[in-house]
Image 1 (cartoon, rainbow over the protein chains, first blue to last red):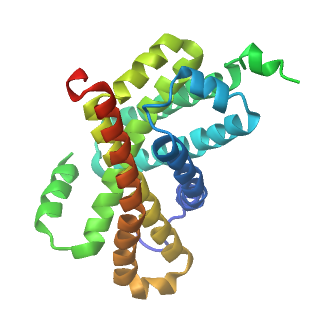
Image 2: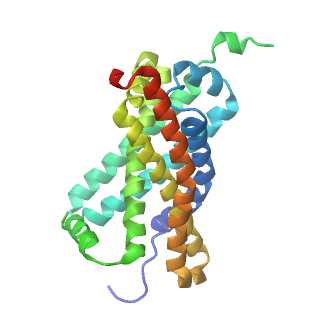
Image 3: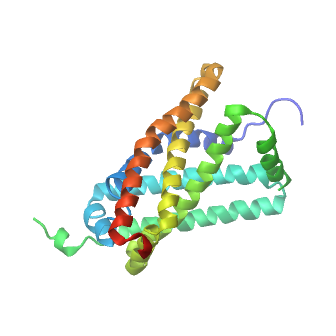
Length: 128
Length: 138
């Protein structure tokens, strides 16, 4: 093939998405790191902390949901780039890419169900 | 696969200086963060699906290998974010490519500046945890 370079709409969108989502994720992720790893730590975090001081508030659930979806799509699109760079066998490339996509759907589903479904403790929900 | 072998060999052999270092660092940091992201979303979803399992996962995060892993994770996230911002900026304003080398070095420096306080604070958490539970306990 010679002549004009081909234009791939999906790849162009994916390229743009990586820049836009990346810039958007930076404050979200840095905020998440500061809250979870610096201000708190794994020594102080437990089930009760998540349910009572985080997911009792809609704002934190939305924060986590944005992070889950934007970072998940960003990470798996990065993985797709890496797979396409190194695996050129057609079958192996498809198996890995479709496997990664299915796995992404599973991870997003698990995270989303937990964010939506986790009940607010009654003691907090009944506060005036 | 042969390209993977080539990448590993050329990373070791090719002297692409800071540009190549930035690229391989970005890729490794991204893949490492993705691996943790997947594990972390699954264990956090246990808050809903399996609360006892979530407590097990947190107990595991308090173990020594994971506390040390956390130090690398935060470095990976900070570097990937800072270097990614440089890439996005340069793609947005292509004239910045003329300053590619300086911007890459600036990304390394900014990563170090942001990571230094985070490292000190996290080491504080680790020392507190170990002195509270006794080093032999975990």
